[in-house]
Length: 200
Image 1 (cartoon, rainbow, N blue to C red):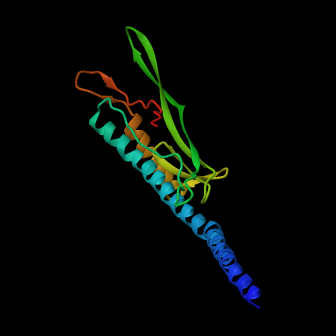
Image 2 (cartoon, helix red, strand yellow):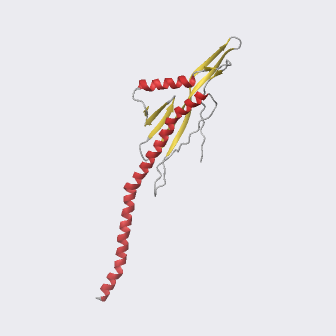
Image 3 (cartoon, one colour):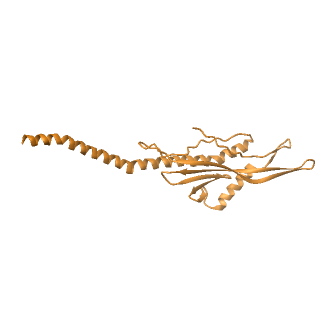
């Protein structure tokens, strides 16, 4: 009888340890299945919102540069990935692409020197997430408008009809790319040159 009691007392800590281990493993599995993915989605949503705000601010910044007619550069800091969460530091990634597209050619005719052709280009900036923990949604800025891109489809971020979007695009292009005559008879033309600077 004493041997049976002694065996029971010896097994009790082992059983308690296994029960505690089962509870810990269950809690960790619950965190991995529900809580951590939810946190990662929230962080990814914050990241996409910051990307959206950056893209929305480009048009105003370019218009301000043109208004003051100064040669200057526009610098924007953007994180290419998001979704880091507690106990799960793995983040998504993304690609940022700047593309220079021909828009029109400005021809200046001079009766003494002939004609001079100046190519005018427009810059397209695009961001596409990779391994996103939320909606696989990218952004494109071109000719004063911000587009949202999902899969192969893209649509305007802030406008409902195509007519509204085209009107804003025409106004932006007119203000940015139209040459302005100065008092000394020189000609000022706004050009946008794309560059990517990577900071680690």
